[in-house]
Amino acid sequence: MGKQMQGKRWLLAGAAVAASTICYTMTYHSWRQKEISRLAAGSTLIDTRLGPIEYSLSGTGPVILIVHGSPGGYDMGQAFARLFGRPRFSYLAISRPGYLRTPLESAPSPEEQADLYAALLEKLNIERVSVLGISGGGPSAIQFALRHPERCNSLVMISGVTQHYSEQEIWQSYSPLKRIFRQIYSKIVAFDPVIYFILPFAGLQPAGAAAIDLVRTALLYNQRKRGYDNDMEQFERITRYPLKNINVPTFVVHGTSDDEVLFADAELLASQAPQAQLLVIPNGSHMAFYTHANIVMPALEEFLRRTIDAQASR
Image (cartoon, rainbow, N blue to C red; front, side, top):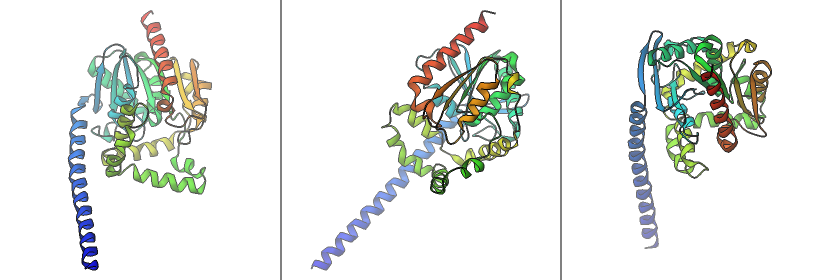
């Protein structure tokens, strides 16, 4: 009798696990399909003279061109825009080539990407923007300021790449344990079911809505992988940008403990760009713009408003 009861318990437990698995699988697939639809509905794919590019334009006021990191997409630009307090600006969030719906062939190099941004502005009849590069969006944002100063009010770099960058070289500087952890982490964040699992926990963080938005930008990695792989290849080719030739006001935000894009990148740009202002986040990580948003965003808004007003008064 005891064995029969024990067998029934195991049977019920197995059935419960199977039912839970089926329920999780069904809800996950339903959720993923909704995310695919949401991303497709939230942007526009437009043809320019240099090729197609995906973008989203929201808000009212002077335009901020937000250039996302690696990986990313226009949704990362949207997520960053939501960190601003009051809606004082328009936010032009793009998907760089190889990400989401922007084909890699449109513009593989940072220089070509900068020209593609200018072509997009022409198509949208936008005369000038402030360009904001996040992390791996740094090189093409710098190139935009260098190649199209007539369209650039100012340059903002958020934890941005400003010089030769090799992910493998960065990883080699880690301890063996940290290197293993980072390799595991990079695999996990490319796996959609993991994102689905952790999203509810992201909502429990400070500024939970913004945390959810940022976590979501890792979704559908298969639609971002070409862009990421191209970025790593392009960034390794960077020798030295003529940062002294940047003739627009420049605002640099970087955490001193950033172990993904080193603080040296910020120091280099701040020391060479003639009109650079550096906001140092002591002990800040690569996500210092989010973890220290109460410091970063007011300072950024003030910089943008000041430089836009100065340009308008000329």
